[in-house]
Image 1: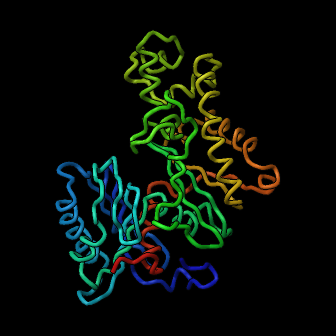
Image 2: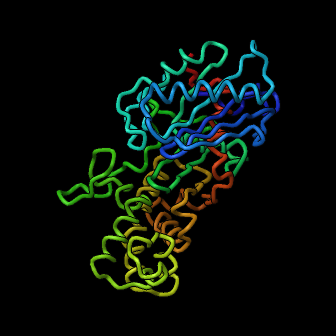
Length: 339
């Protein structure tokens, strides 16, 4: 970990390449002098096949093309940072579990570092850790040294910065707030991680959408169904939020059930971490403002009052660019370089 006080200024950092390897898309961009050069950006679908060997071959080609677009000479050392949608096992980029890529126990970082060679030193980071660092340096986390950034999209992830340093944990898996438990009985929902009762399995966007469509298809009546044109398979959490805003009873009851589950997870994390700023992002929350406000209210009830008195709650601001920027900046700063 690198303490904030020991870090050089952004404009003194070397040219670096940021990569965002998600379950759907693969994106790259260059960062230079602390600025993300979107003119160098590239995006393509992950598609199939997505086995590690095939994706490593693609990544090497795309990274070399990005070096050329950035004007790097063949002998220039250009760090590469990759944010990957996965639970990592160590600082060498070993993927313990990536449901979206369908990987388990893959020595991804070491294999990619070997393929890239020594002039492309590699750092592999959990995607939300990369996003969090991007927001810290260039976005909603600017000006503070202690943040908890929580992203609610398809699933739920978090990144933690304490004392100006990214908290990676003993095995580089810190911040997995989506897999904290909110139920542990025999009826607890099954999560894609293989466990049961995870808050993600209740409030993660894909789980909420599946539940909503299932209940409406079974005959539940709600304005959300009308907003989606009467087709249960077209209903989204955004429709549910619009229905809740209009006073729809089913939508209000659903949000009243789910908001405290995420709120207690966030409140407990605040009790442990004492962040100065809570950053909320992800497509699920950005499209459900009623749910978001209920989650914040539940969080303030669940967290110790002494820790919420000065807590600053903000929205993430960098959008899809946060992970690219964060991964590149972490690699440029030499954080958890594989080789």
